[in-house]
Length: 170
Image (cartoon, rainbow, N blue to C red):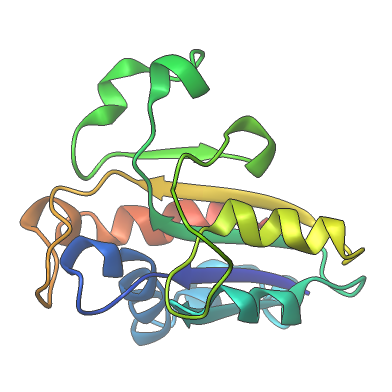
């Protein structure tokens, strides 16, 4: 199986982008409309919301590939010098693998209430979970705040993010 996984938090404005992309894919039936029929049964869109530990359910030998969509604040100069500088603009996105970046989040522990995708993947590796091919689509947020919705910059690009996720899963 291949999974497109959206993560985020509805109540933190642009941090909900991963969830919104999954909704957009489902509401517009994009897997059936844009993916060749022979591949449709092997692709699922999954909303993980903020519980990153549920990712463990998809880390097994029957999973071929995972594409994750989430907000990403990336210091491109230090972590990804080969990526283009103009992608720091809110609404733009960067495609990368977990191996290309390192987390700078300060979390005391792994928790179901706050998370760090890279630390969850590190825990999975340390506990011998199968790690399939993983690609992350990191969307640069305009604003993370305690509110519902998306900034105009991100909302207008939902079709672009969904298309990119579908391209990456193949």
